[in-house]
Image (tube, rainbow, N blue to C red; front, top):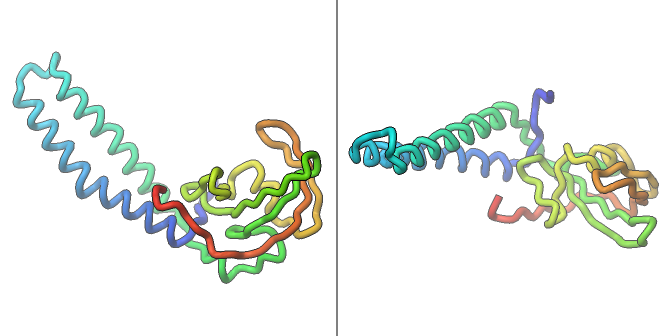
Length: 166
């Protein structure tokens, strides 16, 4: 298992905001829900109480998950990295050699990934096979949907645009 989890400052701030919200807002609201439900009596057959306890369980798990992620966070500024070879924060233009279709991906942290927006996790199967390669390289990528053959048309840094709903 990795000792650190690379991510951009944006990703770190989003995780911190969510964690803070869960701790300072969600937990208090759930505690009030549990208290109100407990006041209704008989806890064995109290659906509101059990629902609130279930919500508390999931919230606490998410808090633990985000706390662990922050503990391993390594903030990386991709704008200061060299992008002659594919690395964290690189934007890569690929040509699928079978279909001649061009696709563009930017390699980001796991929490920041959004494949439909072209943001793929550095831990994804494709990103792992891209890291260290350079323009002009051809390679066969073993992906969950099968093997694809690509040529790297361009490796560059460009400002990463994240969706606001991470």
